Image 1 (cartoon, rainbow, N blue to C red):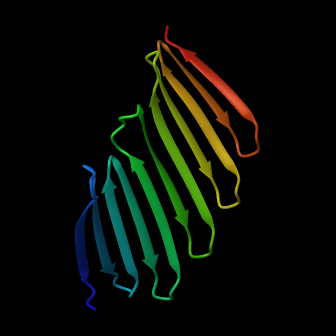
Image 2: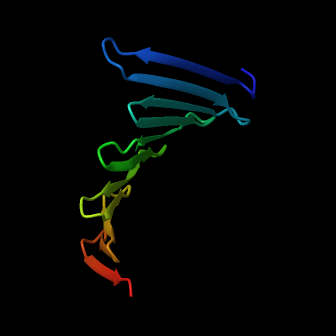
Image 3: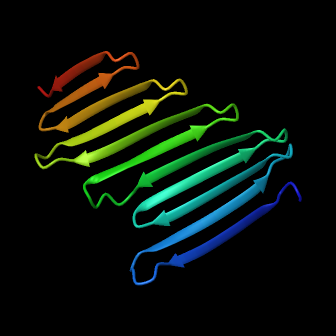
Length: 149
């Protein structure tokens, strides 16, 4: 293999009897130091999934997966990211935007660290005010409201 090796594979999969389609793109590259990086991206019905795998010259592997909802047809958009390092530790984060019937928008976020502790927040924006509620890793909750003057 050469250092500038780049293999691109693209396939379109048609589901029998369905109007939706999935498109997959796979890219593999070899780094200068002998490591290999592989990225697979799949698009299907408003969802984009990206999976990355990196293998170092010593054989250790790290992975990540990102799932995004891009169309928002159900009133929600968002993404989830999960990462696993070569030492076996995993962390994840997610974010969702929702349009509410009263004209406000809500953003929910959460993150879980490699120790398993979770932090989350909810923000509601609209109608002249913003309210944010944060729950820390220790379980304490704080709420703050701002009102337009």
